[in-house]
Image 1 (cartoon, rainbow, N blue to C red):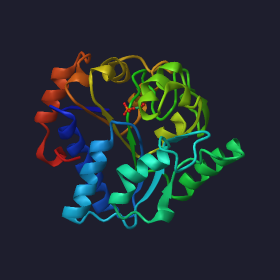
Image 2 (tube, rainbow, N blue to C red):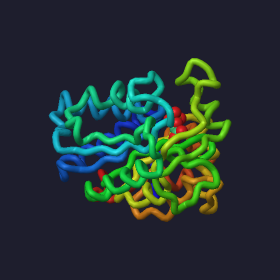
Image 3 (tube, rainbow, N blue to C red):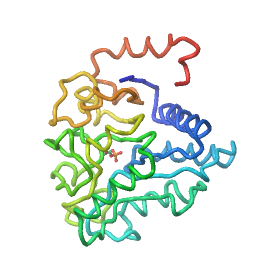
Length: 261
Ligand code: PGA
């Protein structure tokens, strides 16, 4: 696990975008795992800028999103289909057929989840998974107590997560209780993980994930077991880390060959 503490979300997003761009240049048919929420918006903007101004080509890239609300149609204003369309897909050249999100209107949810897992396997697995982190440490919509070996499935949101996400809806009562999310086991199989966290509201979750015990009470803590997980943080979200000065020193003093990895 590498902890990269940057001055602000723009700097963190820029570094994360550079890492994703390098992957796509090395492997033009890369499979990306994508996240929604406020956190990755600047990252997506930066990737769109790289596509428009730097010729970063997404024409062979495939994507799998982490999650979707159950009961929301793709064109619902708060659906993750719509979020991804507006914040990323309409700005880059990923072929429509290469884009996958869980279907919020799936009739047979377990069968749909099994199909989603199969589609990830058929694509050769996820090369790089983008993650945010909930204020309670959730990744995807894997709430507290989620099995650390879980696969794509239905989950029930906690009240805290519903309240955190209510800003995307007209009112709290409109936030669905149920979602489909990739499991923690699914996320752990991606070859690289890029987790972004911004703001003081994430500080405890980040500290627990990076420096606490591995526990289903902070699902992101399982990333301590991932061979290539990087956290891109701003100063406030790094505010509760005990070893912050060490992480900063490490980042500043990387050997040249390691600097952009
Ligand atoms: P946020 O959500 O980026 O909107 O803070 C993160 C998450 O819940 O994973």
